[in-house]
Length: 216
Image (cartoon, rainbow, N blue to C red; front, side):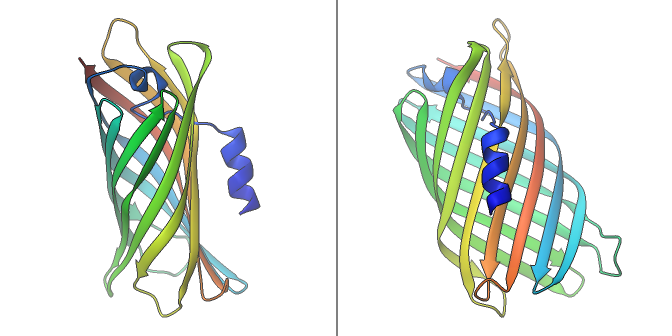
């Protein structure tokens, strides 16, 4: 968990609906689609296994005044150097939020993650609360973003009882003045604990995205 907090402080991010869009009134829409490397580390007692692979993901962000609606989806295959069967990961989020300030957004909603193998599917359902903040990096076109979340309720297909979960997302975003395009370089990590801390599941993701937005 210390690693998550440190990386979250060092690697701030930008979201498709960053500070520049939040400052606008009216309606805004942001779309993105890009390949995204993902790594999953599972630790049980003193044993650790790691899976990694390239996924395809996308997001949709809708802004209506101070209201926010964020949707995110990704899927792809994960492999390991160990003698462990490969698996697929499928993930989706649906978050509703409000922006009380131009640089601050509070969101909540379901986050669903599934691991698919030949033996079956393990599904993780999280109900999360999130806080996101944005800031300029010396230019109105270059933004930094930090988002943190906590799992309040969960439903996990596992023998062990679910303990807790937290996550951080951070990076930078560049928006163009005269063109409706933006680029994001981001780092995302979340960690979930089961069985009174005897098992942990850590998912890391590098987000490299090019998106399109429209506002009125």
